[in-house]
Amino acid sequence: MDEFASIRHWTADRQGENWQQRRGVVRGIGDDTAVVDAALAEDGVASPKRLLLAVDTMVETVHFKQSTMRDEDVGYKALAANISDIAAMGGMPLHALVSVSVPPAYTPERMRRLYDGLYECAERYGVAIVGGDTTSSPGQLVVAVTVTGTVEAGRELLRSGAKPGDAVFVTGAVGKSAAGLHALLAQEREQRAGERLSPAEFSGTGEELLVLAHQRPNPSVRAGRLLQECGSCRSLNDVSDGLASEAWEIAEASKLRLVLNEALLPRSGSLAAYAAKVGIDPLEWMLYGGEDYVLLGTMDSQDADGMRAVFHEEGLPFFIIGETEEGEPGVVLASGSQSQGDKRGPSTHSCRRIELKKRGYNHF
Ligand SMILES: Nc1ncnc2c1ncn2[C@@H]1O[C@H](COP(=O)(O)OP(=O)(O)OP(=O)(O)O)[C@@H](O)[C@H]1O
Ligand SMILES: Cc1ncc(C[n+]2csc(CCOP(=O)(O)O)c2C)c(N)n1
Ligand SMILES: [Mg+2]
Ligand SMILES: [Mg+2]
Ligand SMILES: [Mg+2]
Image (cartoon, rainbow, N blue to C red; front, side, top):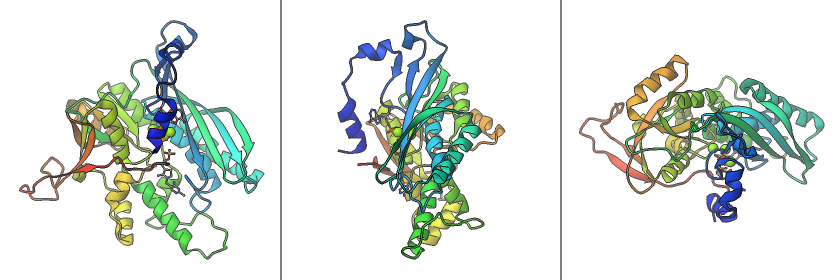
């Protein structure tokens, strides 16, 4: 049973509508965050804002190793990954609760450094850290962060709102984090056995930006707010498990197909250079890598140019990478097409369509 099937097995049809409704639950399990009508939660009148609630966990050896992340990076990324889910609803992040399970290797100084990173991220995104929980751990460090946020009622950007004929967009390059992890793990293998492993120094090298993307991801809060305000964004998700996997989630929730145009996928120069150096197809990292925390969504295709202009004005990247179409839920990668922006092939090129598997990072 995979991760998604497990969650369904544990939770599907386990609670009647009664308590969900009486507690103002607009959207429960199944999206980037839960959506709760704050006023209805207390049997009050309708609120102009709704509460967003989410938790994500980082586990040593699963999400990071001593050789891939400094302690302050672990703190920063644990909060950033959570803020990213609020961004993926078009919301404003507000509060965080931090639960840590601390093994003996993590001295008070190391934990203080982890909190340096947490607070750095909190300051940058205007999040108040309001509590948490602390336990010992026999082996690995576990950091679980719960975030709250708000969004204008009825304006939350769900995975389920896409319509056939929408434009598909991403708010940044994908694959850099996975390439950065590859560089860090390659460095780890080069270090002598028994040496205390620490994150490799990449400053001044071509890999520096990739490693930074892995250790210090920037959740797309401003982008999410712009998309929420514009009114033409129909579905949204953040890229934690990989582009293909997140596209599948929108396809399933909205009951349609996403057609991604390979030539339109943003290609980072540093990613291409590193992929060539180590002989790996960069597409593998771009489609299945994950942990990029950019936003993937769909919008009214008529407003796509306007949206691109709004993002440009704010100095933010925005790429139209495909479109949606009616059909059985699925994700297709089209290459060699003649669509706009594909400058690589002659116009006689035939379009190749590959069905993408729902593959990405899966915990089970
Ligand atoms: N153990 C659990 N019990 C109840 N609900 C869960 C559990 N694990 C996940 N969920 C719910 O399942 C849905 C999908 O969760 P998931 O963690 O895949 O989303 P995400 O945080 O956007 O992705 P990622 O964890 O890759 O960042 C969410 O609504 C989440 O609250
Ligand atoms: C040492 C090490 N090995 C592998 C990875 C890759 N990785 C771990 S979890 C995850 C998906 C997001 O997690 P979640 O779904 O829990 O939010 C990915 C891509 C890593 N970061 N560090
Ligand atoms: Mg998410
Ligand atoms: Mg999650
Ligand atoms: Mg998440």
